[in-house]
Length: 354
Ligand code: PAP
Image 1 (cartoon, protein in one colour):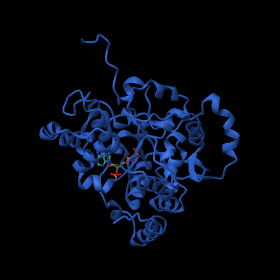
Image 2: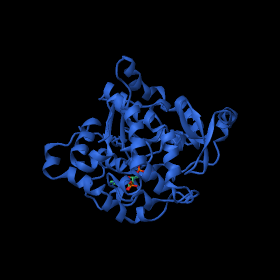
Image 3: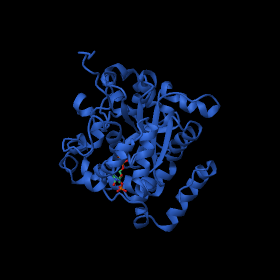
Image 4: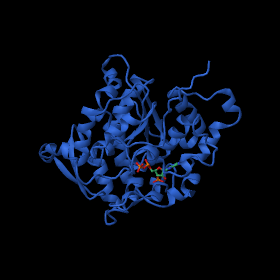
């Protein structure tokens, strides 16, 4: 007998359609309920983040602006992961926008066919499709997360250790326990290319900062969400210990073979492509929809801001999109220095960048 009950909405849905205008902007003020943390934050070791022009504080080994330390604490206390949650995680400038688009298009493909003219990614920037966890917690809007239908697809730049216990059970497994928790898709990138991309992007906010200054701070570890090596290493370790919970992707691999990586992503989130989908080329359609050329051509990505106060324009999320651009900006001596840091901090753990 047919049921009259309306079917429950299925996630992920574009966050902009159900939430507010959520972006990755740094919040100016912590919400009233968290203002008591301000004294604790101001007592932490701090440095100027040259590219952002704000002070960053060392909280639990990572450098964050004050309001994001507050967000990290609020997240650790208040975020309740659901078993079918998927979180896209990355350091800034590692391919977040691209992975957000690919993950959204893949997971939401039954509700929003990727070939449809009305697909959300044709009218929204990829960052508007996923809630940005620290942005919500920093502004006291985290209750919005409870309203989202499952499976939820969310985004964070936070290190794994800043995520709450319900996600962290995956990391605990590196100590020899079992693997449980929700699913995390991490993307990393060759560090020399991260620095160059980061510098170009933040030239919009503080144009006087040189690449050499950016490079120094990156090597020092004291960039936002840094040290980069610990950020990458924590997710890498969790992915090797719990491959069913943490998928570790590389930007360069996505560039080399996007279709295989999209299939891997679909399999990982429990939504593998069917034979029928393969036959009609759904994977290719998703890859084309999310390609740099397509995304940068769309009106939504040519206009508007990621953070208006910091003058970060959306169009600059789509710059060159290649591997190895560092060669045009970084001297051989600088390259050797950063390669040595990477070899020492990551190579000894089996994480190599060719
Ligand atoms: P975010 O952390 O501010 O979100 P993020 O998206 O992680 O930035 O990184 C931007 C980089 O990804 C840019 O690299 P570049 O500066 O070296 O060019 C950008 O060009 C690249 N990028 C964005 N979208 C795509 C895409 N669809 N395909 C390939 N690369 C992309």
